Length: 166
Length: 454
Image 1 (cartoon, chains in turn red, purple):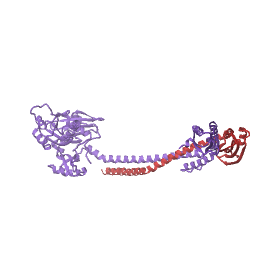
Image 2: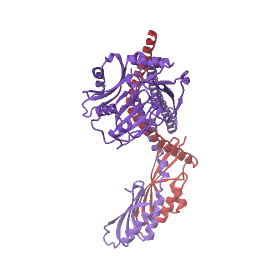
Image 3: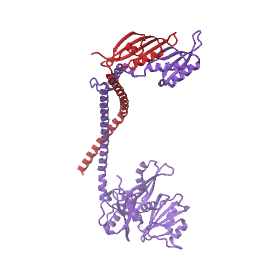
Image 4: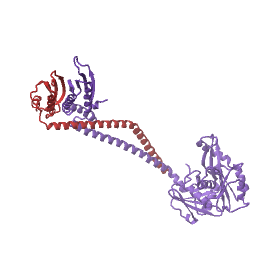
């Protein structure tokens, strides 16, 4: 009987101990629940941002792969003008380069065109923007000419990327 | 610890209606939703099926029921004073009794508590157990006859709303007549007599109801219950004084045995076992002794389960966190193009910085991939030519697209703006003051991308 009582006491002690541990654990879990939810929410947002960045990075990689198939640099605007609009008067005002993606250099050219018709301007811009690699037209300012059918003055800013010389 | 009055651990119970002249034994088997009953003989009780219980009863003459009223609203507190109140009511000492509290109800004014107590003198319990023992039986439960009759009548003939207010169950056997009396579903009291005595019954009923209620329901049961008597029979004289329908219960000869077996198997109100204290059946005593162990084990299991759930939750959270971290790392490597220079936990920041640098480097590539200004210029020149307007100045850049022009009429400037709108631009037309000596209308068209629309 006494042994039974001892066993029962031991059993109750174990049960109460386990209950205390369980309750403490539960309180801790409940207390942490808000923080855990907040962290998970932030992590989910971060993950979405990372996925967007991955898509952008993939776009960049695809662009670089595309440019790798082009010649090292496009024909200069003067040459393109000669082919597209013979007789066009083109003045290169300035040229500047700056580093772009690894292995590539960006080249920016400021051009002035005088006494050019709308159609010729269109042909010239078409030629530069379809070159390999293409010239991007960053800026184009056109001022009218007093001569009917002609445009007096065009200021252009073109930019392209070319492979860096190793 | 309260002595069990039902045996939920078993599916088989034997109800034994036993008196000086004979016995009726009913075997009740619990199925999913119902109880199946069958009559059995004494020989089948020689060896009881495993875990089956045997339920007998103390006759009404060997036991008592009392309603006690304590001026205490709390039922728990009232329970503590009921023994003293019972002691006052009984013609013998409460110490010489085994009793049990069956039900508590608030008093009508809700300031006190009423309690229904059933009990029996220890000498009567001893005598009853000796009588059972002479038959070779040792009942697990000792119910109270009047209470058993009442609860079984409610089970088999539930009171109907608007039905008789007073209900009397009359158990008729060759050696006794027992009355169980109640109002609606509330048990009021039980009485017994050697033979049917209408005048005595009338007096008993008058003690509960000074005037007969609108209707009384008479339920006859017991081995000699019968409705065949007519004329000036004692039953007829009773229904004349206490008018109401009188009917026989289903299988009246086994009614009490059925009640005892039902009450032993199913939990419910007014369950009663007067085999308590020193008279407790050894098997029930053993079960009762095991109960603290069972509770301790159940508590231990529940507590361990709680611990396991919490540990599992923590493991799950850690695992998910590690998994997300792994995903972050692999994404960061993919974005930055190198596993180097990514401190653990700073994958997002490192990736963001890498992307900012990369986007800046890629600007010239992206500029060429955007909408070519050449096409925009071509579209503007075509519209100008077709609408007969002349362009005075034109500025095209990624941020700014403005056309200054002269149109013969304002409607032509409007048409040009409309056409540019139709080509996917957001064209805004504004009239300007024409230069001196200029008959044409001066205007400015600003072009925005349609997605810039507010």
